[in-house]
Length: 449
Figure 1 (spheres, one colour):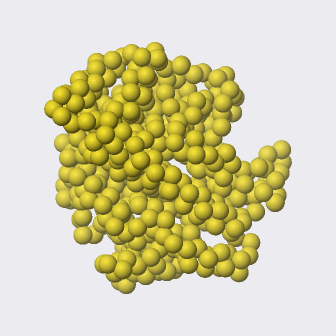
Figure 2 (tube, one colour):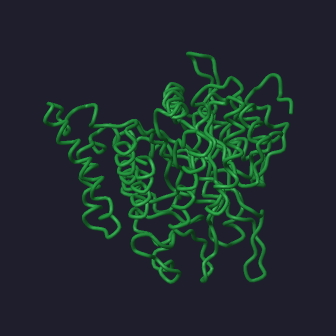
Protein backbone atom coordinates (compact mmCIF):
# COMPACT_ATOMS: atom_id res chain seq x y z
CA UNK A 1 0.00 0.00 0.00
CA UNK A 2 1.23 3.48 -0.88
CA UNK A 3 0.95 5.98 1.95
CA UNK A 4 -0.12 9.58 1.45
CA UNK A 5 2.95 11.42 0.15
CA UNK A 6 2.51 14.52 2.30
CA UNK A 7 1.19 13.93 5.81
CA UNK A 8 -0.79 16.51 7.76
CA UNK A 9 -2.79 16.09 10.97
CA UNK A 10 -5.91 15.91 8.75
CA UNK A 11 -4.95 13.37 6.07
CA UNK A 12 -6.57 10.62 8.14
CA UNK A 13 -9.96 12.17 7.35
CA UNK A 14 -9.76 10.62 3.87
CA UNK A 15 -9.35 7.09 5.30
CA UNK A 16 -11.94 4.71 6.79
CA UNK A 17 -11.96 5.24 10.56
CA UNK A 18 -13.08 2.25 12.60
CA UNK A 19 -14.52 2.41 16.13
CA UNK A 20 -15.54 6.08 16.02
CA UNK A 21 -18.74 7.22 17.80
CA UNK A 22 -21.75 8.58 15.96
CA UNK A 23 -21.73 12.12 17.35
CA UNK A 24 -25.27 13.53 17.23
CA UNK A 25 -24.33 17.19 16.55
CA UNK A 26 -21.31 18.00 14.38
CA UNK A 27 -21.38 21.70 15.30
CA UNK A 28 -21.20 21.02 19.04
CA UNK A 29 -18.35 18.56 18.46
CA UNK A 30 -16.44 21.12 16.38
CA UNK A 31 -16.75 23.78 19.09
CA UNK A 32 -15.46 21.41 21.77
CA UNK A 33 -12.53 20.34 19.57
CA UNK A 34 -11.67 24.00 18.96
CA UNK A 35 -11.59 24.52 22.73
CA UNK A 36 -9.27 21.55 23.25
CA UNK A 37 -7.02 22.70 20.39
CA UNK A 38 -6.46 25.97 22.27
CA UNK A 39 -5.63 24.29 25.60
CA UNK A 40 -2.04 23.59 26.72
CA UNK A 41 -0.49 20.25 25.71
CA UNK A 42 -0.74 17.51 28.31
CA UNK A 43 2.82 16.31 27.67
CA UNK A 44 5.78 17.85 25.91
CA UNK A 45 7.63 16.81 22.79
CA UNK A 46 10.94 16.54 24.64
CA UNK A 47 9.43 14.01 27.05
CA UNK A 48 8.21 11.90 24.14
CA UNK A 49 11.70 12.01 22.62
CA UNK A 50 13.15 10.86 25.95
CA UNK A 51 10.80 7.88 25.95
CA UNK A 52 11.79 6.99 22.39
CA UNK A 53 15.43 6.91 23.50
CA UNK A 54 14.64 4.70 26.49
CA UNK A 55 12.57 2.34 24.35
CA UNK A 56 15.47 2.27 21.91
CA UNK A 57 17.48 0.63 24.68
CA UNK A 58 14.69 -1.95 25.04
CA UNK A 59 14.70 -2.62 21.29
CA UNK A 60 18.41 -3.39 21.49
CA UNK A 61 18.08 -5.73 24.47
CA UNK A 62 19.50 -3.34 27.05
CA UNK A 63 16.31 -2.57 29.00
CA UNK A 64 12.84 -3.98 29.72
CA UNK A 65 9.41 -2.35 29.26
CA UNK A 66 6.71 -2.42 31.92
CA UNK A 67 3.49 -0.94 30.53
CA UNK A 68 0.59 -1.24 32.94
CA UNK A 69 -2.54 0.42 34.24
CA UNK A 70 -6.29 0.48 34.16
CA UNK A 71 -8.40 -1.18 31.49
CA UNK A 72 -10.36 2.05 31.06
CA UNK A 73 -10.15 5.10 33.27
CA UNK A 74 -13.40 6.29 34.80
CA UNK A 75 -14.92 9.67 35.61
CA UNK A 76 -16.60 8.03 38.62
CA UNK A 77 -14.60 7.37 41.75
CA UNK A 78 -11.65 9.40 40.46
CA UNK A 79 -9.39 9.89 43.50
CA UNK A 80 -5.80 10.69 44.40
CA UNK A 81 -5.67 7.47 46.41
CA UNK A 82 -6.62 5.43 43.35
CA UNK A 83 -3.87 7.02 41.26
CA UNK A 84 -1.35 6.53 44.07
CA UNK A 85 -2.23 2.87 44.56
CA UNK A 86 -1.95 2.11 40.83
CA UNK A 87 1.43 3.84 40.66
CA UNK A 88 2.59 2.04 43.81
CA UNK A 89 1.96 -1.39 42.28
CA UNK A 90 3.75 -0.44 39.04
CA UNK A 91 6.76 0.81 41.01
CA UNK A 92 6.84 -2.39 43.06
CA UNK A 93 6.72 -4.50 39.91
CA UNK A 94 9.52 -2.44 38.36
CA UNK A 95 11.89 -2.96 41.31
CA UNK A 96 11.53 -6.75 41.11
CA UNK A 97 12.07 -6.70 37.34
CA UNK A 98 15.05 -4.33 37.52
CA UNK A 99 16.90 -6.46 40.03
CA UNK A 100 16.12 -9.76 38.30
CA UNK A 101 16.99 -8.65 34.81
CA UNK A 102 19.96 -6.54 35.82
CA UNK A 103 18.58 -3.96 33.38
CA UNK A 104 16.74 -0.64 33.55
CA UNK A 105 12.95 -0.93 33.43
CA UNK A 106 11.10 1.64 31.34
CA UNK A 107 7.89 2.48 33.20
CA UNK A 108 4.87 3.45 31.09
CA UNK A 109 1.39 3.76 32.57
CA UNK A 110 -1.96 3.16 30.92
CA UNK A 111 -3.13 6.34 32.59
CA UNK A 112 -4.05 10.01 32.10
CA UNK A 113 -5.89 9.37 28.84
CA UNK A 114 -7.05 5.73 28.68
CA UNK A 115 -10.74 6.61 28.45
CA UNK A 116 -11.95 5.23 25.08
CA UNK A 117 -12.57 1.52 24.46
CA UNK A 118 -13.12 -0.39 21.20
CA UNK A 119 -16.18 -2.61 21.09
CA UNK A 120 -17.02 -5.73 19.12
CA UNK A 121 -20.48 -4.36 18.30
CA UNK A 122 -21.89 -0.85 17.84
CA UNK A 123 -24.94 -1.77 19.91
CA UNK A 124 -25.91 -3.99 22.82
CA UNK A 125 -29.30 -5.48 23.68
CA UNK A 126 -30.70 -6.09 27.16
CA UNK A 127 -34.23 -7.46 27.70
CA UNK A 128 -35.10 -6.70 24.11
CA UNK A 129 -33.89 -3.08 24.26
CA UNK A 130 -31.10 -2.16 21.82
CA UNK A 131 -28.87 0.84 22.58
CA UNK A 132 -25.45 2.11 21.46
CA UNK A 133 -22.56 0.30 23.16
CA UNK A 134 -20.64 1.94 25.98
CA UNK A 135 -17.39 3.24 24.45
CA UNK A 136 -15.69 4.70 27.51
CA UNK A 137 -16.40 7.68 29.70
CA UNK A 138 -14.83 10.04 27.17
CA UNK A 139 -17.82 9.28 24.88
CA UNK A 140 -20.87 8.06 26.82
CA UNK A 141 -22.02 6.50 30.09
CA UNK A 142 -22.09 2.80 31.07
CA UNK A 143 -25.61 3.15 32.48
CA UNK A 144 -28.02 1.31 30.19
CA UNK A 145 -30.35 4.15 29.24
CA UNK A 146 -31.14 5.99 26.04
CA UNK A 147 -29.82 9.40 27.14
CA UNK A 148 -26.79 7.90 28.89
CA UNK A 149 -25.61 6.15 25.72
CA UNK A 150 -25.78 9.21 23.44
CA UNK A 151 -22.19 10.32 22.63
CA UNK A 152 -21.58 13.65 24.37
CA UNK A 153 -18.72 15.90 23.11
CA UNK A 154 -18.53 17.70 26.47
CA UNK A 155 -16.99 14.53 27.86
CA UNK A 156 -13.89 15.23 25.77
CA UNK A 157 -13.23 18.31 27.88
CA UNK A 158 -13.76 16.36 31.10
CA UNK A 159 -11.28 13.74 29.88
CA UNK A 160 -8.71 16.45 29.18
CA UNK A 161 -9.14 18.02 32.62
CA UNK A 162 -8.91 14.68 34.43
CA UNK A 163 -5.82 13.75 32.41
CA UNK A 164 -4.17 17.05 33.34
CA UNK A 165 -4.91 16.55 37.05
CA UNK A 166 -3.67 12.95 36.92
CA UNK A 167 -0.42 13.96 35.23
CA UNK A 168 0.16 16.67 37.82
CA UNK A 169 -0.21 14.15 40.64
CA UNK A 170 1.96 11.54 38.91
CA UNK A 171 4.78 14.04 38.48
CA UNK A 172 4.55 14.97 42.16
CA UNK A 173 4.61 11.32 43.27
CA UNK A 174 7.44 10.17 40.98
CA UNK A 175 9.74 13.10 41.74
CA UNK A 176 8.77 13.90 45.33
CA UNK A 177 10.08 10.87 47.26
CA UNK A 178 7.12 8.49 46.90
CA UNK A 179 9.14 6.40 44.42
CA UNK A 180 12.21 6.11 46.67
CA UNK A 181 13.90 2.73 46.15
CA UNK A 182 14.10 1.87 49.86
CA UNK A 183 10.41 2.58 50.36
CA UNK A 184 9.30 0.57 47.31
CA UNK A 185 11.47 -2.35 48.40
CA UNK A 186 9.90 -2.20 51.87
CA UNK A 187 6.46 -2.54 50.25
CA UNK A 188 7.69 -5.61 48.36
CA UNK A 189 9.02 -7.12 51.56
CA UNK A 190 5.56 -6.72 53.09
CA UNK A 191 4.07 -8.54 50.09
CA UNK A 192 6.55 -11.41 50.39
CA UNK A 193 6.02 -11.76 54.14
CA UNK A 194 2.23 -11.44 54.19
CA UNK A 195 0.89 -13.31 51.17
CA UNK A 196 1.00 -17.09 50.61
CA UNK A 197 2.26 -16.77 47.03
CA UNK A 198 4.78 -14.12 48.07
CA UNK A 199 6.78 -16.59 50.14
CA UNK A 200 8.06 -18.31 46.98
CA UNK A 201 9.90 -15.09 46.16
CA UNK A 202 11.76 -14.83 49.46
CA UNK A 203 15.13 -15.52 47.84
CA UNK A 204 14.61 -12.77 45.28
CA UNK A 205 13.53 -10.31 47.98
CA UNK A 206 16.57 -11.23 50.05
CA UNK A 207 18.78 -10.52 47.03
CA UNK A 208 17.29 -7.05 46.62
CA UNK A 209 17.75 -6.42 50.33
CA UNK A 210 21.41 -7.42 50.07
CA UNK A 211 21.88 -5.07 47.11
CA UNK A 212 20.34 -2.18 49.06
CA UNK A 213 22.62 -2.88 52.03
CA UNK A 214 25.62 -3.04 49.68
CA UNK A 215 24.80 0.37 48.22
CA UNK A 216 24.46 1.85 51.69
CA UNK A 217 27.79 0.34 52.74
CA UNK A 218 29.40 1.94 49.68
CA UNK A 219 28.26 5.36 50.83
CA UNK A 220 25.16 5.63 48.62
CA UNK A 221 22.35 6.90 50.84
CA UNK A 222 19.43 4.95 49.43
CA UNK A 223 16.95 6.98 51.46
CA UNK A 224 18.09 10.37 50.20
CA UNK A 225 20.13 9.95 47.02
CA UNK A 226 18.43 11.91 44.23
CA UNK A 227 19.18 9.12 41.75
CA UNK A 228 17.14 6.67 43.86
CA UNK A 229 14.51 9.07 45.17
CA UNK A 230 12.54 9.51 41.95
CA UNK A 231 11.83 7.75 38.67
CA UNK A 232 10.95 8.61 35.10
CA UNK A 233 7.34 7.67 34.48
CA UNK A 234 5.57 8.03 31.14
CA UNK A 235 1.93 7.90 30.08
CA UNK A 236 0.20 6.07 27.24
CA UNK A 237 -3.21 5.15 25.92
CA UNK A 238 -4.86 3.65 22.88
CA UNK A 239 -5.23 6.42 20.29
CA UNK A 240 -8.76 5.34 19.45
CA UNK A 241 -10.73 8.59 19.31
CA UNK A 242 -9.06 10.39 16.43
CA UNK A 243 -10.91 13.70 16.77
CA UNK A 244 -9.56 14.07 20.31
CA UNK A 245 -6.03 13.03 19.32
CA UNK A 246 -6.05 15.50 16.43
CA UNK A 247 -7.10 18.33 18.75
CA UNK A 248 -4.07 17.69 20.98
CA UNK A 249 -1.53 17.40 18.17
CA UNK A 250 1.03 20.21 18.16
CA UNK A 251 4.06 21.20 16.09
CA UNK A 252 7.21 21.20 18.21
CA UNK A 253 8.84 24.62 18.22
CA UNK A 254 12.35 23.12 18.44
CA UNK A 255 12.22 20.53 15.67
CA UNK A 256 9.19 21.46 13.59
CA UNK A 257 7.88 17.89 13.99
CA UNK A 258 4.32 17.03 14.93
CA UNK A 259 3.61 15.36 18.30
CA UNK A 260 0.37 14.04 19.73
CA UNK A 261 0.56 15.75 23.11
CA UNK A 262 -2.24 13.75 24.73
CA UNK A 263 0.34 11.19 25.98
CA UNK A 264 3.98 10.27 25.64
CA UNK A 265 3.18 7.00 23.82
CA UNK A 266 0.14 6.04 21.73
CA UNK A 267 -0.85 2.64 20.47
CA UNK A 268 -3.15 1.20 17.81
CA UNK A 269 -5.45 -1.64 18.79
CA UNK A 270 -6.07 -4.99 17.16
CA UNK A 271 -9.37 -3.73 15.74
CA UNK A 272 -7.93 -0.57 14.16
CA UNK A 273 -4.57 -1.62 12.71
CA UNK A 274 -5.74 -1.70 9.07
CA UNK A 275 -2.88 -0.46 6.88
CA UNK A 276 -5.28 1.60 4.76
CA UNK A 277 -7.18 2.88 7.80
CA UNK A 278 -7.34 6.25 9.51
CA UNK A 279 -5.50 5.20 12.69
CA UNK A 280 -2.35 4.07 10.90
CA UNK A 281 -2.49 7.15 8.66
CA UNK A 282 -2.81 9.55 11.60
CA UNK A 283 -0.17 8.02 13.84
CA UNK A 284 2.44 7.51 11.15
CA UNK A 285 2.89 11.30 11.04
CA UNK A 286 3.39 12.07 14.74
CA UNK A 287 6.83 11.57 16.26
CA UNK A 288 5.74 9.99 19.54
CA UNK A 289 6.84 6.44 20.23
CA UNK A 290 4.05 4.19 18.98
CA UNK A 291 2.67 0.77 19.74
CA UNK A 292 0.51 -1.65 17.78
CA UNK A 293 -1.39 -4.65 19.11
CA UNK A 294 -0.81 -7.87 17.14
CA UNK A 295 -3.29 -10.70 17.61
CA UNK A 296 -3.41 -14.37 16.57
CA UNK A 297 -4.76 -13.63 13.08
CA UNK A 298 -1.85 -11.31 12.17
CA UNK A 299 0.30 -12.50 9.27
CA UNK A 300 4.00 -11.81 8.76
CA UNK A 301 3.08 -9.65 5.75
CA UNK A 302 0.70 -7.54 7.85
CA UNK A 303 3.24 -7.07 10.63
CA UNK A 304 5.96 -6.06 8.17
CA UNK A 305 3.49 -3.60 6.66
CA UNK A 306 2.93 -2.09 10.10
CA UNK A 307 6.68 -1.74 10.62
CA UNK A 308 7.12 -0.04 7.25
CA UNK A 309 4.16 2.30 7.75
CA UNK A 310 4.84 3.37 11.34
CA UNK A 311 8.65 3.24 11.43
CA UNK A 312 9.95 3.65 7.87
CA UNK A 313 13.25 5.09 9.13
CA UNK A 314 13.78 2.06 11.41
CA UNK A 315 14.41 4.16 14.51
CA UNK A 316 14.97 1.97 17.61
CA UNK A 317 12.27 2.77 20.18
CA UNK A 318 9.84 4.30 17.69
CA UNK A 319 7.67 1.17 17.39
CA UNK A 320 6.55 -1.40 19.97
CA UNK A 321 4.73 -4.49 18.72
CA UNK A 322 2.44 -5.78 21.48
CA UNK A 323 1.52 -9.42 20.95
CA UNK A 324 -1.83 -10.60 22.33
CA UNK A 325 -2.10 -14.18 21.14
CA UNK A 326 -3.71 -16.12 23.97
CA UNK A 327 -1.98 -18.72 26.12
CA UNK A 328 -2.85 -21.59 23.78
CA UNK A 329 -1.66 -19.87 20.59
CA UNK A 330 1.41 -17.83 21.49
CA UNK A 331 4.01 -20.60 21.07
CA UNK A 332 2.73 -21.45 17.58
CA UNK A 333 1.66 -18.05 16.21
CA UNK A 334 4.32 -15.69 17.53
CA UNK A 335 7.61 -17.23 16.23
CA UNK A 336 6.82 -16.71 12.49
CA UNK A 337 6.16 -13.01 13.20
CA UNK A 338 9.35 -12.65 15.23
CA UNK A 339 11.34 -14.35 12.47
CA UNK A 340 9.88 -12.16 9.72
CA UNK A 341 10.59 -8.93 11.58
CA UNK A 342 14.08 -10.11 12.50
CA UNK A 343 14.91 -11.15 8.94
CA UNK A 344 13.69 -7.79 7.61
CA UNK A 345 15.99 -5.96 10.02
CA UNK A 346 13.27 -3.94 11.76
CA UNK A 347 14.41 -2.67 15.17
CA UNK A 348 11.27 -2.91 17.28
CA UNK A 349 10.33 -3.52 20.88
CA UNK A 350 8.38 -6.74 21.40
CA UNK A 351 6.04 -6.69 24.41
CA UNK A 352 3.50 -9.25 25.63
CA UNK A 353 -0.12 -8.39 26.42
CA UNK A 354 -1.21 -11.59 28.21
CA UNK A 355 -4.65 -10.20 29.08
CA UNK A 356 -6.79 -9.73 25.98
CA UNK A 357 -6.22 -13.10 24.35
CA UNK A 358 -7.35 -14.89 27.51
CA UNK A 359 -10.71 -13.22 28.20
CA UNK A 360 -13.83 -15.36 28.59
CA UNK A 361 -17.24 -15.21 30.25
CA UNK A 362 -17.57 -16.82 33.68
CA UNK A 363 -20.31 -19.21 34.77
CA UNK A 364 -22.18 -16.22 36.23
CA UNK A 365 -21.90 -14.06 33.13
CA UNK A 366 -18.88 -11.93 34.11
CA UNK A 367 -16.01 -11.23 31.71
CA UNK A 368 -12.89 -12.58 33.37
CA UNK A 369 -9.38 -13.96 32.85
CA UNK A 370 -7.56 -16.71 34.71
CA UNK A 371 -4.25 -15.84 36.31
CA UNK A 372 -2.73 -19.16 35.24
CA UNK A 373 -3.52 -18.45 31.57
CA UNK A 374 -1.95 -15.00 31.88
CA UNK A 375 1.24 -16.55 33.27
CA UNK A 376 1.26 -19.25 30.59
CA UNK A 377 1.08 -16.65 27.83
CA UNK A 378 4.00 -14.72 29.31
CA UNK A 379 5.98 -17.96 29.60
CA UNK A 380 5.15 -18.78 25.97
CA UNK A 381 6.19 -15.28 24.92
CA UNK A 382 9.64 -15.77 26.47
CA UNK A 383 9.90 -19.24 24.94
CA UNK A 384 9.06 -17.94 21.46
CA UNK A 385 11.77 -15.31 21.67
CA UNK A 386 14.28 -17.87 22.90
CA UNK A 387 13.38 -20.04 19.93
CA UNK A 388 13.95 -17.26 17.38
CA UNK A 389 16.83 -15.53 19.17
CA UNK A 390 15.11 -12.20 19.76
CA UNK A 391 14.65 -10.07 22.88
CA UNK A 392 11.47 -10.49 24.93
CA UNK A 393 11.30 -6.81 25.65
CA UNK A 394 8.39 -6.23 27.99
CA UNK A 395 4.89 -6.85 29.31
CA UNK A 396 1.67 -4.86 28.88
CA UNK A 397 -0.98 -5.58 31.54
CA UNK A 398 -4.27 -4.26 32.86
CA UNK A 399 -4.21 -3.84 36.62
CA UNK A 400 -5.37 -1.84 39.60
CA UNK A 401 -3.92 -1.26 43.03
CA UNK A 402 -7.30 -2.01 44.59
CA UNK A 403 -8.38 -5.33 46.08
CA UNK A 404 -10.81 -6.21 43.30
CA UNK A 405 -12.03 -9.69 42.34
CA UNK A 406 -12.11 -9.61 38.55
CA UNK A 407 -9.56 -12.23 37.47
CA UNK A 408 -9.74 -15.86 38.60
CA UNK A 409 -6.93 -17.68 40.36
CA UNK A 410 -3.84 -16.11 41.84
CA UNK A 411 -2.64 -16.50 45.40
CA UNK A 412 -6.15 -16.15 46.80
CA UNK A 413 -7.35 -18.75 44.29
CA UNK A 414 -10.39 -16.68 43.34
CA UNK A 415 -13.22 -18.75 41.85
CA UNK A 416 -16.30 -17.86 39.81
CA UNK A 417 -18.40 -17.10 42.89
CA UNK A 418 -15.74 -14.72 44.23
CA UNK A 419 -16.08 -12.46 41.18
CA UNK A 420 -19.29 -10.98 42.59
CA UNK A 421 -17.56 -9.71 45.73
CA UNK A 422 -15.67 -6.72 44.26
CA UNK A 423 -16.15 -6.71 40.48
CA UNK A 424 -15.70 -3.00 39.77
CA UNK A 425 -14.25 -2.59 36.27
CA UNK A 426 -16.28 -0.61 33.74
CA UNK A 427 -15.03 -2.76 30.87
CA UNK A 428 -12.43 -5.54 31.05
CA UNK A 429 -11.24 -7.50 34.13
CA UNK A 430 -8.01 -6.34 35.78
CA UNK A 431 -5.40 -7.97 37.98
CA UNK A 432 -5.62 -6.78 41.57
CA UNK A 433 -2.56 -5.52 43.44
CA UNK A 434 -1.57 -8.93 44.80
CA UNK A 435 -1.99 -10.69 41.46
CA UNK A 436 0.02 -7.93 39.75
CA UNK A 437 2.97 -8.37 42.09
CA UNK A 438 2.76 -12.14 41.75
CA UNK A 439 2.96 -11.74 37.97
CA UNK A 440 5.95 -9.38 38.26
CA UNK A 441 7.90 -11.84 40.39
CA UNK A 442 7.12 -14.64 37.95
CA UNK A 443 8.35 -12.51 35.04
CA UNK A 444 11.41 -11.77 37.16
CA UNK A 445 12.08 -15.52 37.30
CA UNK A 446 11.85 -15.69 33.47
CA UNK A 447 14.33 -12.82 33.22
CA UNK A 448 16.74 -14.58 35.54
CA UNK A 449 16.41 -17.73 33.48
